Image 1: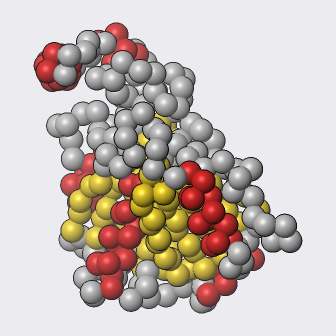
Image 2 (image 1 turned 135 degrees about the vertical axis):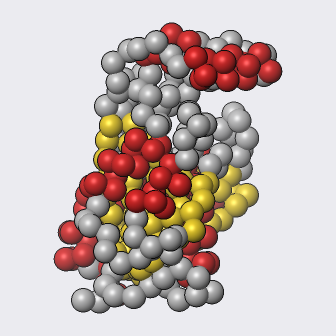
Image 3 (image 1 turned 180 degrees about the horizontal axis):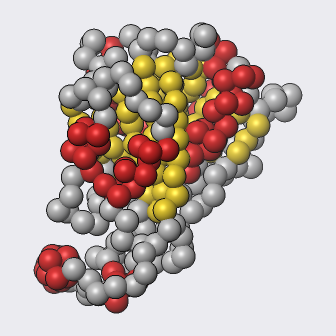
Length: 283
């Protein structure tokens, strides 16, 4: 059974005014920093955006059209875990949506996490355990245990995207392909093989070079890169923004990213692709 993209949304979230850090979080992050031989930056936490995944999930659900039919599965994907371990955003979402869906979260895979979430959702659908699925993708800048600046920049907002998928009704059939153990050159070559099949739009993540992702001469593929402000949810935000155009115009849209293995961001890694066939969407 193939899941179809039935809807999508994206929200950006500004930071909060600086405020004294919660003593519970201070204790947790101070202990973690000592355990891993680093220093907890409390002023950084007090200046951070401090939007929890639950905060963002609330705004994201409000941005989606009203969900009337019961959901079977909710999957929340993020590059890193929520900065506040006391809250369960997945539990919040499963309580907010109709039905009594199974819910779980995926993290620590970088920008691969949303693709893995979609692939797992497809596997649940294939065995008849999930006809309606909500996948959410979270970008959070608050990382008080990490001495480095946020990847998005110190003034970046937080962001969240949602993909609503259904086995029945209209929408573009969705297919996820993941290729591990590739060099960046091999990833670009593999991507070109996909573009050779005829792709109208490529939404390319930060792990791939837009110029090297350009399709072969003669192909009419539009290549679009999202804002670096949202490294995990940005491509899905573009998908949500342009969904009415894709639905109207048809064609095949590919969302792609490459995530290197290892902490230094070099070496082999995984190419992830999500193919949406809007030409096969039915009314």
